[in-house]
Image 1 (cartoon, rainbow, N blue to C red):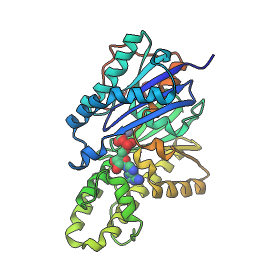
Image 2 (cartoon, helix red, strand yellow; image 1 turned 180 degrees about the horizontal axis):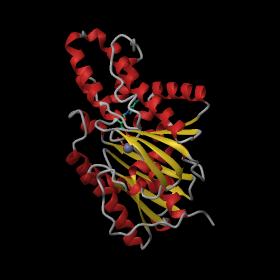
Image 3 (cartoon, rainbow, N blue to C red; image 1 turned 60 degrees about the vertical axis):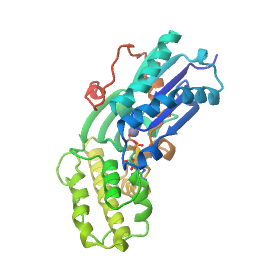
Image 4 (cartoon, helix red, strand yellow; image 1 turned 135 degrees about the vertical axis):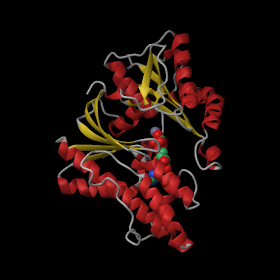
Length: 337
Ligand code: KG4
Ligand code: ZN
């Protein structure tokens, strides 16, 4: 007999994503319908545009995920949906679809935290989650988490203002680059000199595990009138290096403080090549091991949600159909430290 199948939906931001997983480790399908082009015209995600588009897409994406998995809907043993954090109107679409499917099929429903999806994505494909320090760097979050095992997390620190990805997006907008800003800045930075402009490394020596990126964004804004279009590569390289410096320094510091030997990096910014290169080098220097989420798992997707759902289901945890969405990070995720 094959392992049980879970169908998971993810609609917390601007991707309508559905995945089917068999057991904990065997991904049967992962489909992502991105709305990035729709939002590019606005330079950021417009919540109502996102939720309307999720509604239009969700049925087709579920169908495609089942087809690519080669399974009938009736063979799905449980349905999972991201219930937060994210845009409320967007979350409602995927979470409600997952609950509706579970209700109609009389199968369990599993509410999954989007941040947990990112956090565990470096271990996607593994039966177990080892103790580590998790660095989650996305458009909505910048977190350092002490991971004991799946389901047992202690929040060490978070951004006090902008998330790292948000800073990339805002600086890209200031520089007239496209959305999402991270990959655009990374590409322009390749030809630049990171030392040319002196940019702040906020809170690098704050003594805690928190971050702040809004001052860096403001510093770029003040520099702009004094620069020419030809300076853009240097500005991008300098900005990227400042973000990377802080992320690397604070992650290594957290690993030392918690005596962890492994660091796990996830989220959209986790795909940044300079961050991966610098963290890998620093970790090797300090005797730490680093696991990066694979690039296809860094951006939002439903495979990471399915993986978390599978781990929870195996541990005997399911969620009531009445479980509401929670748009903010909240503290529930860290209640079982
Ligand atoms: O994880 P994600 O897809 O969505 C959220 O949960 O937020 O992350 C998206 C964020 C955006 O802010 C985007 O600009 C950033 O990740 N990002 C990057 C890179 N690729 C995506 N930032 C820096 N370098 C990249 N290569
Ligand atoms: Zn995300």
